[in-house]
Length: 122
Image (cartoon, rainbow, N blue to C red; front, side, top):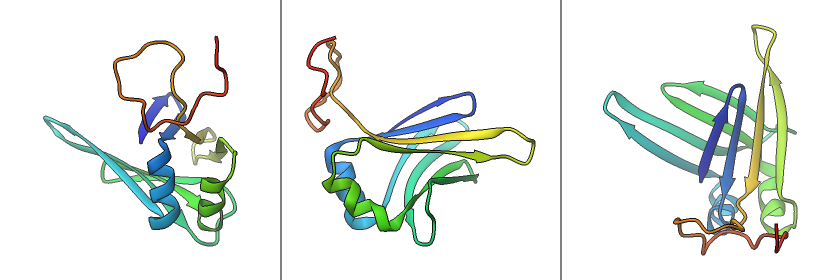
C-alpha cells in the first residue's frame, strides 16, 4: 500500500494482493520508520458507515472503509472510492482509495502485482 499526501488530500493505492487481503481481513497497515519515531498508515473496514472516513492519532492515519463494500470492490472493475470529510476548522480533508495500476513509463519499482493499466499508451 502506498500513500500520497498533498495539502489536505490523502490517497492510498493498493496492489492486487493487497485488495484481495483487505477483502478477507478488513485491515492493512504500513509503517515508515524515522529517527524520531514511526509513522503508520492503515486501511480498516468498519461496519455502519456509508462513505470513507478518517482519523489521525498517535502518528497513525487510519482510513475507514465501508465493511459491506470490501469484498465487492475486490471482485469489481471499480477503481476506487473518494470522500471529503469536514474538519473543525472549517476546512476539509479529501480521501481517496484506489487500485494501483502499472505505470506506463519505465520505473525502477516492482510492478508485477499492480493492476494492468487500462491506458496502454500515453
